[in-house]
Length: 123
Image 1: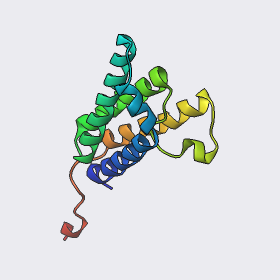
Image 2: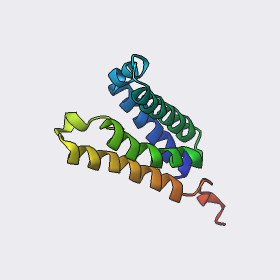
Image 3: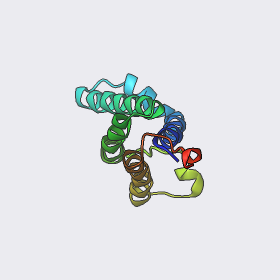
Image 4: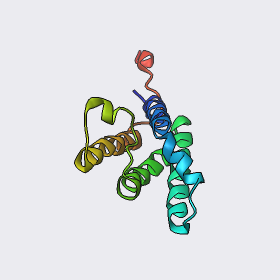
């Protein structure tokens, strides 16, 4: 699989994860405290930048994910990928492991080739 395919799958998972966390998006727009507003806006900007970058198959989308995963874990305690609670995982250690999976996905996107393989040209 090439970078574009992997990054689009990861972008779709992040978009579904954002839909699962819709209350957090509403929370960002209802904040009155300046520091909490800054944290919420930065998180939302990172999520949007990551989804757009990964959907386009760009390396900077994966780099944004490398920043977003720890930020989401530490600052907001929010899972990036969907299905964490459906699987039955709960608690801070499970959240860290779940977001570590997203982080590893970003590393895989950065390590894969951006050029699709051409196996039929081997003649």
